[in-house]
Amino acid sequence: MRKVFKMEDLECANCAAKMERAIAKIDGVTSAAVNFMSQKLTIEADDAKFDDIMKEAVKICKKIEPDCKIIL
Figure (cartoon, rainbow, N blue to C red):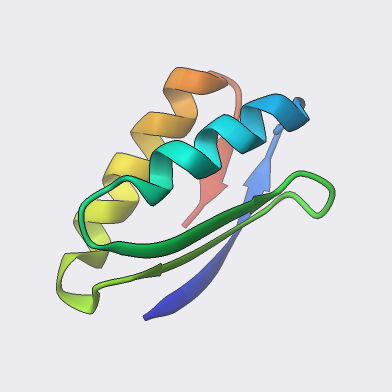
């Protein structure tokens, strides 16, 4: 399954790259892309694990940039 999520308050291109790399390492994720300019997160992942993957992705984003939000 592939989904695109809007992000808010992503203020650092380097942080976006860190988030992308960390989210791509989550078990079940096929691909992940964080676009700093459009403030969007695109994730392609296993349908059965998608909710758990998104919970982990939110934690990763908060850890890297505490003010950043993923609009689920």
